[in-house]
Length: 270
Ligand code: PAF
Image 1 (cartoon, protein in one colour):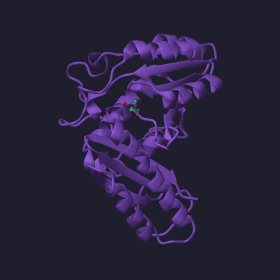
Image 2: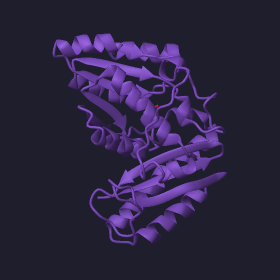
Image 3: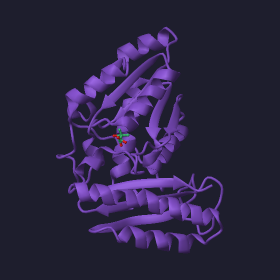
Image 4: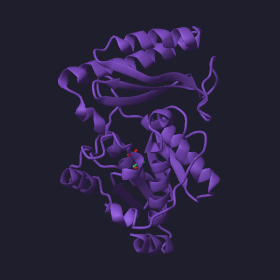
């Protein structure tokens, strides 16, 4: 992979990169289409990264429909599908990890200790191998996107990290590989998450206090059977610190369990 990347770069060709863990859906397809449009070559990686899963998380049951993913990549004109083995990324004796301090401990980081250390480590590793001019990430994982942008800035990576709009199902549920864990009734109820975020953001944009708008959203989300909220908060769009009054670029971030499935989503405040 790296040798091909060097060859392309020598010829002045740009590489657009879409890192994934597979189980590709229309959200990934939209990232790949954008990479296709903006670059000479497109590389997609599929690697279910053990370092970003906690001991009691879904690493072993994470969906791995590789043949289907490969067919989708071929149909979208991907030049290289990079599918490394765990040993290729973490050979025996591997010792180096990337920590984006502060940002990685907030929100999802609080509930999934070590998760973003695993994400930043594998993403930097993949960037080193692929040498992209641009890498594309969905805004659904807003904290992940912020952490990767910060890492790229701090480490002077000569590439752009591009955040792309979240793709949603017809009822508003953010597309995610984990949606397939939901039972049919949980899937129906899951639409309430985005509806609650939209209502909260509308209220805040109309001048209602953040605390009271989020209280109503919390109640609505908790009316979903078997739901539990890890966090629901309005944050600064760059520092991800909690805010009590609106400001430019702010977002509402949420992580919610429905049954055994953890969903995350976020929405921009005006
Ligand atoms: O968002 C994902 O699918 C993963 O966290 C990523 C960025 C591919 C790193 O494993």
